[in-house]
Image (cartoon, rainbow, N blue to C red; front, side):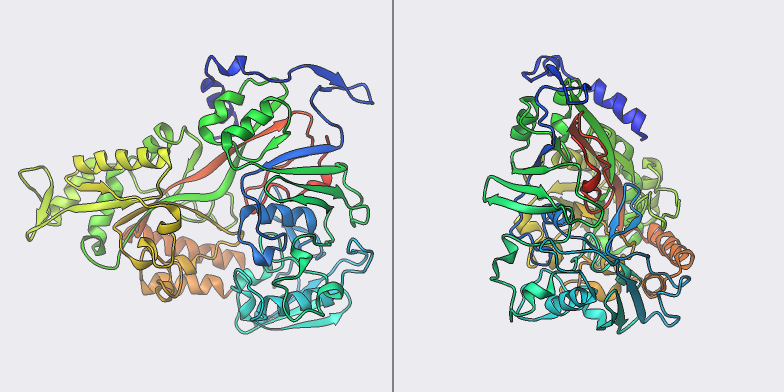
Length: 543
């Protein structure tokens, strides 16, 4: 679905009451005489965050709000723009094997650091900060949220003040993205190197960074006030203050936008979009994300260990209808777990919706209809369960539709949902393999590496292959992609691997999520990104 069609869809969803919602709709003028909303405060941007981060140091938090705050407070090696492409930040050039910054054996990656970048106290940002940060991540006394990728580094070598080389234990293509947006950006060694552990250092409450903004005040449970950083290497941002309001309730955030107390909701709850579609002074922007909804199968044993049954079920599910009728059309049909905007996208066709073919496959596989309309084979009924998180009405509706469609094919499907904290726990149904079909969302990273999701060696408790799928040829292709840096070779590997997985059907990809951002129309240069954070270019914002 393109942006024009989505905007038409937004307009079509407007209810009669939306146009009469209480809001500040008058217009004023700024100092230059241009018209602006009366509720606009020039230079001040008020944004809503659903979750309050537990720390402002990314290595201690896995929350999306921590990614957003990191974009504002720290300078990563690379940021990722509105096309998902790397933008040089602290590093001046993206390493490739062609430009010589990746060695021929793939074991050394060199980063050239930008001279003139300073921490907010005036100290220079140097290679010492990158080396220190890697050591802090690998320090067992620091409770970092993950060491993935960093533990494949054998050493970080300071070549000079503005160049550092990563020495790897093995070639690892995603390693070029370490220390970048979505990962852990460099921290100031001159302030933190003296601590044996960073766990209880107050830096996480009031960090001093090298990004476009600095912390002024953090009132826990309420808001985080940031001010522009006059020492930022790109120049002081055009927005002088950002007030980050922590608003967990989606209705409250929409109400505050209506009353002029907010300027930005970075992802409106979909059932509430219609309330904002005709609100004067508010601009709605659709944005395709690297968040894929999928229906994975437990391939480890039982009925679903048979790829023939999995393939039949996939043909019986009308994915387009679910996207349209359940998720309001806010999604793009998915085929693989590589986002459609990625350089690694293959263009493979999706599994077709063909209920007649589904029934024929099951007939040929020996699953015969029983007297109650449910198929049987060797005394076993074709009865399964589907699992998602509780408290999500669209997911429940989708499960109901899937159950209806499978019943028409002779498959009994019951719904067995869990609270998110239970569903995704290490001893929960997914990671323990105590489920049949899962209906969940996964956020993909900047790099298309997905060996950890499908690799034979990454089944729980050794990884996140909760489908318990293993195909040695798929494994070989994904490993080849992970250990080479040439994009054409990697693209071919992913395409070949997914041709096999579309045959085996360890899961059925449903859609890529399209969020809708609501913003004060006076906010300029806000360019939402498909990966990591929409705050990647905050120094360009203007209000």
